[in-house]
Length: 81
Image (cartoon, rainbow, N blue to C red; front, side, top):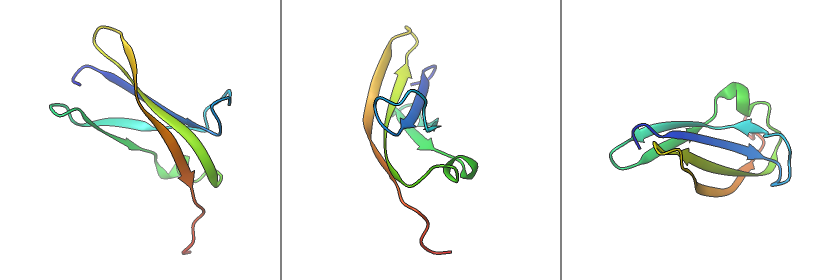
């Protein structure tokens, strides 16, 4: 995945115009194609509890876009304070 560009975002629904948040995608192991998705505290603190949809796309060195994965993210409010 060296030289590839990855993007990921989450939305309240597939039909939402604007993303709720963008996820950071970091290449963890280029040889094996492993990436890590993350969000910082400032981003996560502004997300309301609920279910969201997300996907991860890659842009390869030939400018081909591929959706690698999609799914649901469940945000649960903090319990221990």
